[in-house]
Amino acid sequence: MNVAVASRLAVSPYARRLARDRNLPLEALRGSGPDGRILAADVLGFIPVDAPGELPAAAPAPSIAASSVAAFATSIALGALRELLAALESSGKVFDIDDILLRAAGSAFIEMSGAAKAGESPVALELGNRQVLFATTSGMPLTSLRAMRLAAQADARDDSQRPAALSVRLLPPSDIRPVMMPLLPGRAMRLTVSVGTAGDQAECLVTADTASFDETSSTAWLAALKSAVEHPLRLFV
Image 1 (cartoon, one colour):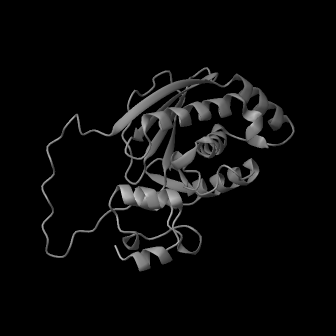
Image 2 (tube, helix red, strand yellow):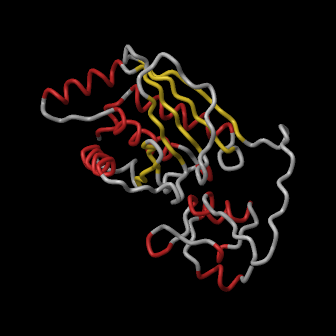
């Protein structure tokens, strides 16, 4: 790597560490942050381009030992959230669980410590066969976040090709819940949420690329998400 060139690039510390761990030259990355700053999501979503005329290498045989995907699940009680949303609705302020999940996901990243923190990375909401990105879900007022989500659902925008640390999928109400979900391209984590038909509990499944988020970080993130949803008042501050 040309050290002089690399030193002039605007790179977040976590993105620099990820690039070093993956032996990726910083000058090969395109930053999506302010003024072209390279963020962790840019490293996680980087897809190398084959050199012209070069045949792609044969894919290695699948190996269980080489797998770097882990999954963790938890149940979240929704009683306090339902009461709060009902009280807000009676005063003319309507919010959906989608809004709460987006805000809670961003807040959970902020609570992660050290190099595992990815609060600077966008969160993608899965809408059928497309995704929309929200860049600052942790600090954005819920009213603004809801307005952005409704606007995104109304148009045909698809951010599937843009990098994000996490994608969030809310399944239709059902008593059947998934036990494993694949990661989406360019995403290091995937949160799948299934709300029971009674509406008083949600089953949450996190699938994570352990090369980006190790088991300790993934379980800590899921625990922070659970706490935020079960104690929702803090999400409105």
